[in-house]
Length: 98
Image: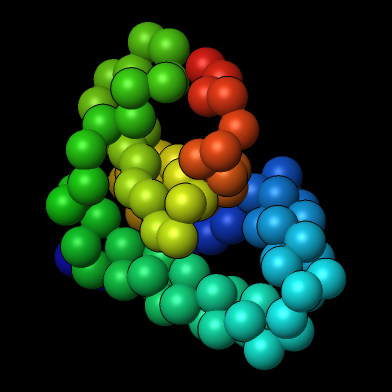
């Protein structure tokens, strides 16, 4: 069953912050990164369970998963009707539990 992919406000702000950083060097590269990330997260609507459980989520009941693209870590949760993108962080940052 295909589910709706929804970005939490915090994840959007984190994505935009990283894209702003890339834009300082190359606007074109920032757009390419943005497009690829949005394509990959949109695919979660169909293939939501192909990634591993998020090891940084405390008390993970198995619905919190994660994957990496271009040194960015994307954490999401599978609910009954949605895939919620929760966090977007650089893998160069120290990991934080949530």
